[in-house]
Image 1 (cartoon, helix red, strand yellow):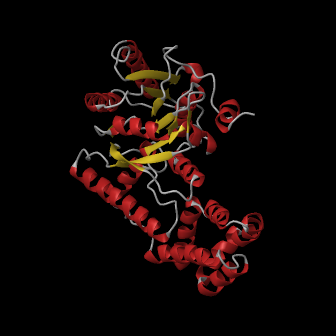
Image 2 (cartoon, rainbow, N blue to C red):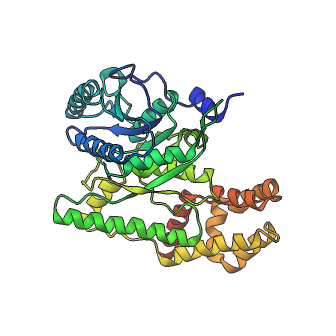
Image 3 (tube, helix red, strand yellow):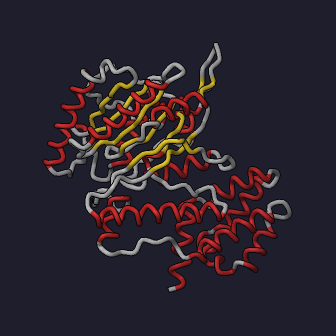
Amino acid sequence: MKNTLEKYCTKKAVKNTAVVVPFIQVQPICICIPVHNEYPSFFSTLRSLHLSSLTYLAHQKTKAVPVSIICCVNARNSDAVSIRENNAKMMYELKRLTMSEYNDHPLLNLIVLDCSSDDLLFNDTQGAGLARKTAMDYAVLHGASVLACLDADTLVSSSYIYCLQAFFSNFMNVSPSSPSIASAWALTGFSHQRGAVEEEEKAVRIYEDYLLEHSSLLYRCGTPYYPVALGPTIVCTAQAYAECGGMNTRCAGEDFYFLQALIKLHVHQDIVYLPCRVFPSSRISQRVPFGTGKKISEIIEGNVCRVFEKTSYEILFKFIDIFKRTKNENPMEDFFHEVSNNLSILMPFLEQDGFFQDWQKIFITHHKSNRNLEYAFHDRFDGLKIIRMFHFLENTKQ
């Protein structure tokens, strides 16, 4: 019988991807990067990875695990000629690097996937999500054990490669007959790069403070969906990648949905934070309808960037607390009555959402195990549901 990873590779993985320089071996650790209109700035990212690898090699105490940098150079049918030309320059330079500097690098190799040439373009509904998925799927199809997401405009700290090595070692189960790797994931720290001008720098710090405050408030509420969802902070094993269904193909927000899927794998476990940082770009961008670049642009234009009303977080805290208190007694009836009597302000949203109708089915399936019931609760009331709840509560106040 096929395991989860084999099933994923057979049924869901993107296959037949064009490789610029074929026959380069995929290593156990892969750093997967979507690249779109990033010439020449992407070379700063490669340089930071190179420097991090040299730092690791200078201090390593155990045998190093080789690392592949997998770049998916991508464009859409509707992209301007200038973007296609930029990508062509990028692929030319990356091909040169693949066969020169990275051909005899002591730790890193470079693999370039072509989703930018005439017959390989994405359609207009595809973008960052598919590019990220293409690189990650290529990694797992060719035997990678650990996948790290990164962006083409993101730098890494000197300890980044060391942390990937440690993550691999912690979750690799080696037996004489069959080495395997566990289902696990982790997050790096992050700090945005300095803005190019003062107003940009001020805006990015406002945005970063907002992200961290929102995350902290969610943590206090008791939901597992509190981490900041930034693509380049995510690291996972191939097993976890397959178990959560792989990367989605959204044009924007793919990191939010992917992180949510990873959280659902291990709701009861503490989130692992690796002792390293990534440094996303703070540049203004209109490439996607939301995200860092778009948000910074809006802040500079005068839009307020703030967390939701404190009462919204308090309502979420009470809702989760009621569930925790009633799950050991009569969670079907007591949960409903407690919410309707003590949290009536939330009932219109729950009724519109159909939560309690679904809860009846969940209770029947999972009532014999409090642990399974708690997992099912958080699976049903996930990060996206919480955001929708907050918007509902604040819109009904107006």
